[in-house]
Image 1 (tube, rainbow, N blue to C red):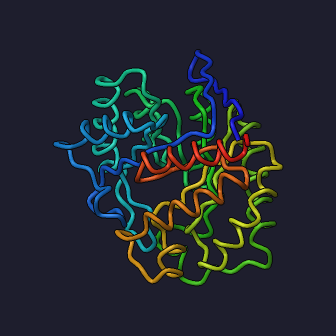
Image 2 (image 1 turned 90 degrees about the vertical axis):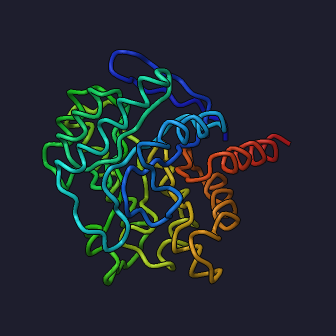
Length: 278
């Protein structure tokens, strides 16, 4: 708990006292958690609320990656996410903005509009130009594990050892990103992306093996099926479960919590930090 996170963002070094909270802003009509769907009229209000509640990073996505989601065209994704990032950057120029995309052209346009990092569910596999593009942009990069694609990932996910396989995958993708010239690589085990509830909980228990890779760990557990199936609730009722799993993630080495509910996640970090210091 409490380690410094330092990244090169373009030509500027930025240091943050971790763990951090990344707030989710979905400029999409079909994200799985309905209240997270953000239109133009409430974009800046939501961004301001998340920043005031303690988010260090805002993650803006223009294409849903929920299980079974249909692929959005590059043009539609670009038209959604780039103006949103430009608007937030203009209003909150010091805010750290992330673009949630697997497409290199979207990443390039988003960074030109004010994004400071790229969050890629494909870890550079879905667009072969992504790693070279991020290297040229000079921003931090989040590589996530996913088995399959959003359209197929939950059909029949299988692993012999989910922790070992995810760790190996992220180690290889981190090395590939470094080899392409990306200076700062963060890793995300991809909870809910090509994994059953049992896989997800095994991964959460085994996160310390991932932490041994030495890269900051981004964890997205917020209101996901691994909570809902255990508790028998829907995403709208999963905040308490999210808080419990975020606590476990921090104790197992998480550096960044990617969440819909920023204030509650900030409270988790404060309380776990206080407990760790006592």
